[in-house]
Amino acid sequence: MKKAAEIIAEIIEQKQHPHLKLRIKHRAESFTDLLFHTLFDQETPVAENMMLLAKKFHELVELVCWDPNKSCIEIWDYYCSMLPNILKKLNLDAKAIAENDPAANSIEEVYLSYPGFYAIAIYRLSHELYKLGFPLVPRLMTEYAHRLTGTDINPGAQIGEYFFIDHATGVVIGETAQIHDHVKIYQGVTLGALSVSKDMRHVKRHPTIEHHVTIYANATILGGETVIGAHCTIGGNTWITSSIPAHSIVSNTASVKIKTATHE
Image (cartoon, rainbow, N blue to C red; front, side):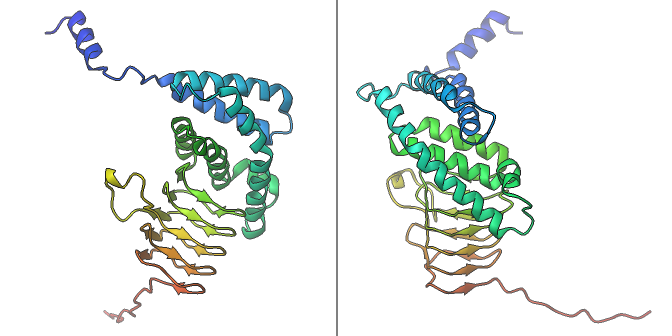
């Protein structure tokens, strides 16, 4: 039987990553919660919270060892200047859900209860940080939303305006995916890569979805060269690995056979 001191020493020896601090994750989640409340909750004071958010952001920068040549204050100021535009886009996303989902009783219901809207919100808020070369915190933000909603949107994806994810559970949108305006996606949809290899790190691996496309439940669309043309309708459970021309309907037609009645 090993002694406690030996066990502790072995555990410490195996902890080989000096920058792996779980408080980074917890603080990123706290930052995300406060940011969401600041932008949407009518009872949350904006001016006061912006100061608190700046403090939380500076703490995160120190923890993740960001580029010392980049000014944290300048980056935060720039990010803050982007928030009104991000909020404008998110209000359009909420409007898209309210106008397209007959089950939505009010716009407030969308903000408060729709997992698809929350996932889109955290994606948009993380995407701007991702663009600034600050990758870890944006990924932690979207993984937090993933855990809460079942929707996995990489912060590197490029998504246009008036975006609607219905039901949300099981949606996966890869890092290099490009989604244009007025796109609707249902649960279980995957916009993924045809293959996974580390040497494809800087290659477009995920599809492009042009404007006014609707993708129904559990459709899988793969590949960086795959383009779904404007105004297409992609049926549920379809598997697509090549481009589809605009104004197309793609379906996975089921075979229906009538059972022969058996009489005793």
